[in-house]
Length: 316
View 1 (tube, one colour):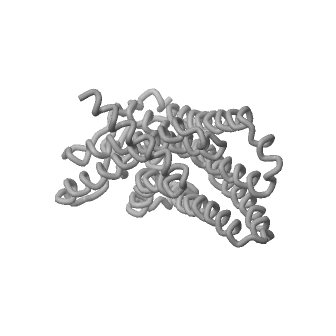
View 2 (cartoon, rainbow, N blue to C red):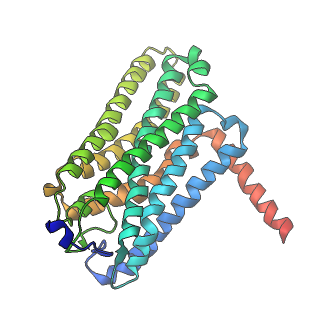
View 3 (cartoon, rainbow, N blue to C red):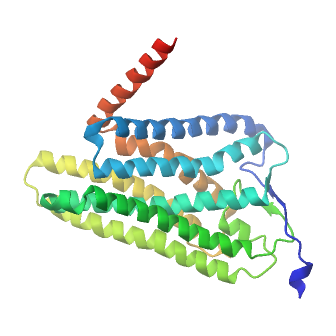
C-alpha cells in the first residue's frame, strides 16, 4: 500500500568526477581529446577494414565489431560527462539515465563476448589451421557476431526492466559521473534484492564465464605455440597473443573490480578512476593494440588517407 505514495524522480543530480571546480576545464580538454581519439581511431579502423580486401578475414570482421562497440560504449557516457563538466548543476533526466545505462551495459557485455569469440578465432587459427576455413566460415562468423550482440543486448534489457519496477523517491544524487547499476540501486527506496541477484548472475556469466573461456583458449594456444619449431613463427604467434591478452587483462580487471562486488562495499572514488579506464582509455588503446601494429592495416590506412585527401582536393 505504501507503494502508491511513492513518486518517481524525473531527474537525477550527478556528483561528477572531481570535487575541485578549477580542474574542470583542464579535464574537459583532456577527455574531449580522448573521446575524439576513440571516435576517429575506431572509425578509421572500420573504414580501413571495409575497403581493404586482404583484411576481409574473421579476425578483422570481429575487430570491426569491437570498434563499433567501443564507439557505442564511449558515446553513451562521455558526451553527457563533457556537458556536465562545464555546468555547475550536473543533471540527467530519468529517461536519459535509463538510456545511458542500457547502451553502456549492453556494449560492455557485448565486448566481453567479443573478446571470447576473438580468442576462439585465434585458438582455431593456431591450434587447428587446416580446419580454419571450415570452422570460421563467413556464415559461422555472422552467426557468432549476431549471437554476441543479441546476448549482450538481452542481458542488459532484462536488468533495465528490473530497474524500471523500482521506486525512486529521494535522494536523487548519483555519486558518479554516469549512470550505472550500483549507483542507481543505491538510490531506490524499494527492495533491490532481486536486482542485485540478477545483476550478479549476469556479471558472473558475462565476466567470469567469458574470462574462463578465454583463459582455456589461450592455454591451448600457448601449448601449441611452444611446440612450434621455427623461432620466427613462435615470435609472430606470441606477438598476436600478447596484444589480445593485454587488452583482455586490462578490460577484465576493470570490469570485475567494478561490478563483481556487493553494492554495500562499492568504493566510489576508486571506481570513478576505474570507470575512466574502461569507458575512455581502453577504447582508445584497442585500435592501436589490435590493428595499427599490423602491416596490412598500415597498407589499408595509406589507402584511406590518400582517398580522403583526393576527395577533398577535387571537391575544392
